[in-house]
Image 1 (cartoon, chains in turn red, blue):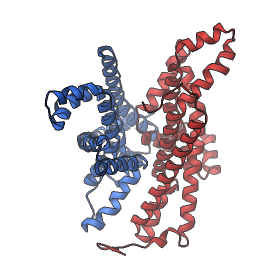
Image 2 (cartoon, one colour):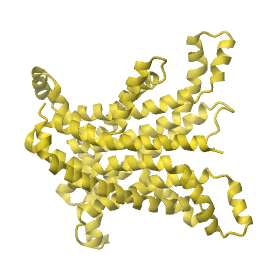
Image 3 (spheres, one colour):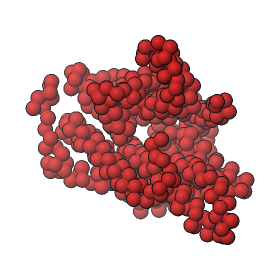
Length: 242
Length: 218
């Protein structure tokens, strides 16, 4: 199959040793994004709650976090975690890090992606909380529910459904951003595509494969989440797509 | 902390900032244009316009920007027979990629205009083209300004990805200085601070525009 001056050789995708590299790359992309996502959800929800608390210093701290992480490029944050963060540790801790953590780049990637995504998750969580009409609280209190019960039985189920679509988008963004970890040497799928090209000069095939990985995962997650949304839909609550 | 390292290399690093701005501004203009065309396709009732535009938007929104850059990097020698200059490769990748995001912003802006506006325009005898250009777009543009400013901030941050193809924009230069001086903490804090200054100015502007829009809403 010729394309101008190019002969396609798709076997670079499964031939030994490249096939194994790709599988490893895909697996790394997936667990890197999932670990980062876990950090992002935990930190992000905490920051989101900070931002709506009636205590001024908490609100300030929350908004400070969001501003810092949203207004600097992710790549700068990634480099900071990888190059600069270890230098801020005390001397013995640095040595321990260099001796005992051979894949520091991976953990720097997880930390950077997790804390960055957290700032975006926090904003979605906050606007989800603010989107709940105040009457819901009043109605819950007037039926005699305690504050705890109000949140547990009225607000949480409500807020949970509001935040699912933006959280899905954010998860996919986190997953795509994991590709930047290649700049600090993490062997995820984008880096693998680039790396295999340096041996075989078949970059078009490898990039196509990497693109398909991202598109397939995005499609699967989107389909799964729209199925979940339909399952837990409360009639008359939110009209989606309007 | 050794702030001297920043003073020593300030000139070199700020030289990269010029390129960063150049990339951002060209991408903003080009991406908007591509986005406008795509948005028209997305809103068209003709299948041969609607489906290609929709596929384009979904395709590029599903890919990481870094992969789009690599696509261009690998594809251009095959198509043109020689490798593309890094600057043009970056510009094309950015415009193609951001166009998909602009398309969604513009589409949302156009859809925020009540149907009555178009009906009124048609009833005065305007053609569909005139209706779009003279009635719908001016109002839609006003509505989407905050979102466009936010997107500009994102583009400004995304230009740092030109790093991967070796373009010497701001972050690349900071990286080069770090390789020579080994002063990561100071240098990356400085880089972060600089980006932060420009981006938070943009974010604040977007916020104020949005507040004003909410106030003036009829």
